Length: 323
Ligand SMILES: C[S@@+](CC[C@H](N)C(=O)[O-])C[C@H]1O[C@@H](n2cnc3c(N)ncnc32)[C@H](O)[C@@H]1O
Image (cartoon, rainbow, N blue to C red; front, side, top):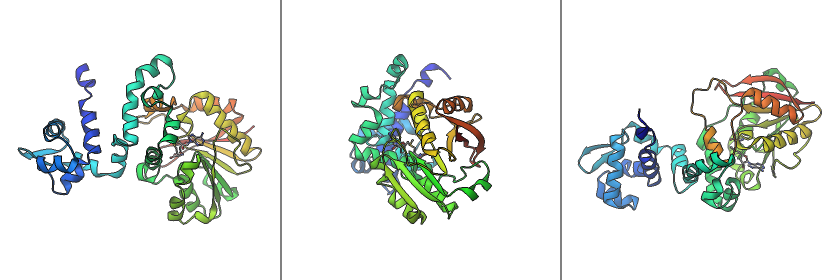
């Protein structure tokens, strides 16, 4: 592969445009002819045709007759809700795509430059745009990432002594819902920003666990609900630089003291799948951490790693105790 091929941005942008204009849906609805497709998508016929022909040349869509486009297996992926959520330039997909334009600045300065593109930092941007925030929450939840695995303790026998679980930065509650469903005697508390916990009701109702859940809309940089048996941190620490990640861990340690445990998901060393690590850099200045990096951070925050576990899906977690 040569550098021009590696740095060619046309295909990613064309895929984003196709997703945003719902081209796959229009074609699936019988509007594959370019005039009908352009009208349905609200697009310029000629420009749209050029975008589609580029995509066809890359194996996305087919053009079985001149000016008539059809879905192939790859293009059918654009019908998937999660794929659309992540690619739609009018939603969170646009935030993620345009944020790459700030990579140079982030690399030069060593901190996120997201505000240079959007006028404010990522979390503040979500606060200011509830629709984009709801997209982000959906992408993080079951609609985007599927049903989470409730296997969050290294030794399943330990659930005997667990009565309360707090999911810190738990999004709209999909992990907590699965944990409570798997452990009917356990009660749960969801902690996340007020606008996000407000969207959790349906998730808990659908899982049939709403009567065992309390939701708390607050910052995890403030003191957390105390005295629970387990505090979960999934896909949270990777959103923050070390200083903030340590502060979150310290809040968990304080709340869990003296006998609770803090379970944090860590990077899977052998993961072959693409890491969102650089996306974390441009969006929020976060990073993935190896197990050793996590252990050090946890130690500074008053936590000692006592066990490590691996979910059947391959995701690793560390179980810590306050010291
Ligand atoms: C990447 S998402 C992970 C959500 C969930 N744990 C999961 O694995 O799907 C990070 C979460 O942190 C929450 N968050 C960001 N800043 C926060 C803060 N200051 N206090 C509490 N939650 C916050 C976001 O609303 C979001 O739900």
